[in-house]
Length: 460
Ligand code: 4AD
Ligand code: MG
Image 1 (spheres, rainbow, N blue to C red):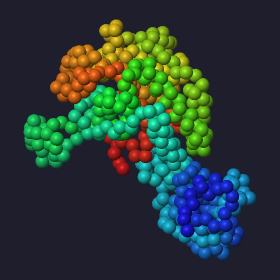
Image 2: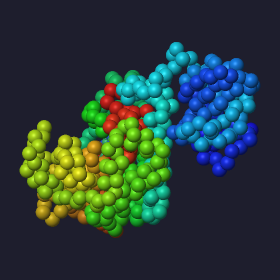
Image 3: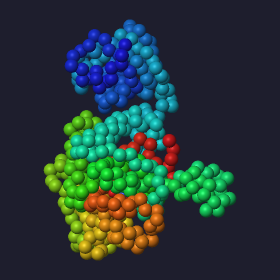
Image 4: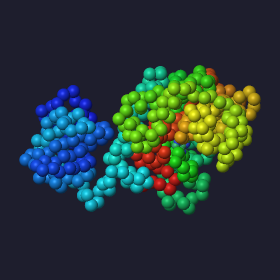
């Protein structure tokens, strides 16, 4: 007999004389003559209640079933007389698929700390919170692909192994096929003997590859893992994270901001509407202010604020920042959060940043000191999106690469897109985990990914 998921059983249009469900036991309660099991199979947040009469086939097993054991149940789906669920299953036969020793199975208590659960990342998806998180993560990824398909963007796959540092921040992981025996070689020997015969790294951003594709297909997006060897042990930085990067030809900074705002609001609404049950868990147990924060995000347009004005607001505020701000300094997360959370109380798009704190590819403004960059800052997180109009003028771009002392030859292919039929274009990168933090209220990036990789942490 085919398996019915718990979700399908609970949303069944009618009772059913015989179904087969499988799942993990969450709780067991014994009464006189029968037992109740709550099972969960990950298809939804809710458990399915199973009623097992002592007379049914396999009932002798019940008294040994602990939290975490896996079972298969054949039975009748009936309207539940109990409160809190529409249906329950009256078991006809019960099979034990795999026991879980209550002495050693770590998920016994109802609530464990996030810190403890991180040490058992292979088991935490079986808890309500992490199950809900992973279903929302999946819905968000599907929502992203649907949004871009609807808006005429081609999905492109950009490489993970790269020869160039897109952001120029030097925070890259090296890729090598050489073993420890290469330790005695000189640097030049190592490079020449290595797999590619040149230095190879894990990409920090797909942008440099997405640009030539946008300058051929018009509108593209890439959505994949990116890697940063930043030693920042914060709640918002991971060494491996997913970045969504749309890139549009024939577009400027205003188009870029419009896209970012439309995308973020669309996805927030999607999660609130279509993942209502899972979202409800976060609103109830993780951050009670979450629904109001997100409703507010949906109700008001994002603020658009030149960097210079952002600095003025920060300088004029009575708040004592750890890093005082003046024109030319990069905004820290304390500044970003002050703007979005306290001053404007909604998302803020800061644009036209000083060129000296931004990457080489950003389009230079006529004032000679700023570039057409934009960051979307959101309450609770700070920077969610970073992007820009791209410098499409060959001479300006070459000038900037030289000025920054970057190897011009290495960018020959990138410069070709400006040499032949250059067009104004723009794009951005959205940190997928940070978006997850926004829609769930989860405060630590380690808890919005299944198996986080962070500074000094690579367990699973
Ligand atoms: O602002 P970033 O560095 O922008 C770029 O990499 C551009 N090349 C993107 C583009 O224009 N196509 O990174 C983009 C976003 C950030 O706004 C942030 O949300 C996220 O990526 N991000 C991180 N998320 C988790 N952990 C980290 N270490 C992150 N670094 C950046
Ligand atoms: Mg950035």
